[in-house]
Length: 133
Image (cartoon, rainbow, N blue to C red; front, side, top):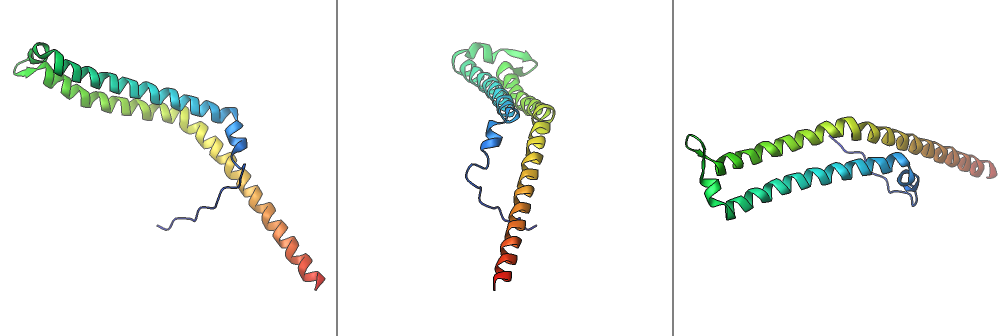
């Protein structure tokens, strides 16, 4: 599949987007979600590491059968990772994606308008140059 060539950004082109309250809301929502998820994951991970290093008796305690707390908590690390990823995608679909799509559509319309104006002006210059000669 061939990619469409990307055009260079015009200076100041994204200034209006950056000043838009919806864009700031999108960034705030994403930052809040990302910080919460990263803090949750790292807190849980470092707790597991700390328990493994300093609470050996607790980690060696059988949870059920031949499965001890270390193995159980280690498996729960994987489960929690998938739960956090699921939480992210669920939140992103409901709170981030619709707002992002709205901003992207508006930016696309503005770009199409700019390109139309550029084509009209180029055609006008072409006609003016042709009629002068």
